[in-house]
Length: 83
Image (tube, rainbow, N blue to C red; front, side):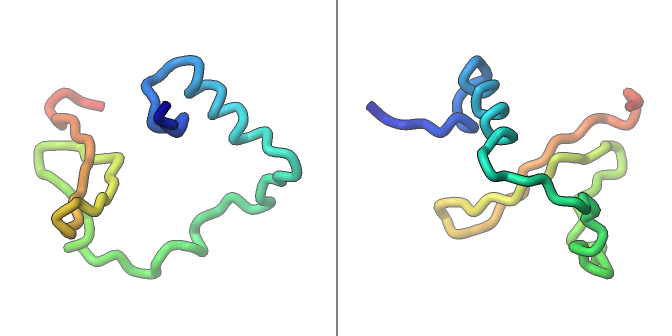
């Protein structure tokens, strides 16, 4: 039998169970400050921002491929359709 972590399984009861267990770990205390402002770089370089003139872009993930190159995977929605 091959073990597949819950976050890689298709949506279903296993995914719900994983989500609940993630937030109910014994001895786990939530951070008192949820601000990420102090963790962000001071400046963002425009060449590091993915944007398209006619699309809203979100959900960017960077993956390292078997070829050793990094690939950006993201979602987009036509601006003409509204938000």
